[in-house]
Amino acid sequence: MSEVIYMPKLPLGCGASNYEPRKIDEKFPIDMAVMDGSKAFLYHWHEAVEILLGLEGETTVGIRSGDVTLGPGKILIISSKESHSILPGNRKAKRLAINFSLSLLRDERLNNRELAEAFNRIEGFSDSWSTADIEKIWGCAYKIWQEYMERQVGWREMCLAALLDMALYAHRSLPKRNMAAGEETGMLRETLAYLSAHYLEDISLDSCAEELCFNRTYLSHQFKKETGVSFHSYVVNMRLRRAEKLLKSTDMPVTMVSRESGFQSEKSFYRVFRERYGVSPGAYRIKVRSSDS
Image (cartoon, rainbow, N blue to C red):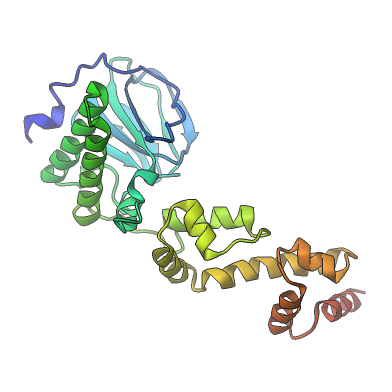
């Protein structure tokens, strides 16, 4: 294993120690610090991807597959929204933590959506990597840290270049984890969370893709691939389930049920409801209530 894996040029006193993770700068969403092992972080998750590099001593990190020990020369990549914890340990243990938003990798001009997804699909702990894998990812991380700390002209561009290099290598070369049946990718998790919060509004595939910084065509393809239905059908199904609940549990006029369920047109509400249930909304309400009495 080459010397760079131990980052001999990294001054351990740099950056903040045991900082509370800050809200990442939206203009350039990347942040980092060297931390010691004295403070625990209970199970939590965040939007940013977190890369931990072991510098000195050992730190125990709880991840989806169990506890792992981050020692000198080891790397742990924690994907976006992955629950994890840091157990308290020796103050002399040191680790470099790099946090970055996936929005840095979602540039539609490059059509590189799969690069952002790479960090959600790999085996994140370096014990399952080859020596060449560790050297490559460590080298990219070191370059990001170096540019971030020195802040010379063009440092943001250099950080982004190193991050893209890392993402491309992760996508092409790092071992992939076996996703459990039904496990959602980061893209699907974000999309479903967005739909849960906004399905009653006038949303579309275009507006969702724009809001979440996804490529429209790729989002449409992946959504149907992972859910089995189109984006539009999924939204309509959510609205119909709400309409069904309102018809069963309230005396709300059908016109209001349509509006309160997110349908922009009462005519379209009647049409899709009849297609699904075989009767009009009013007839459905009568049928359900008579069967319950």
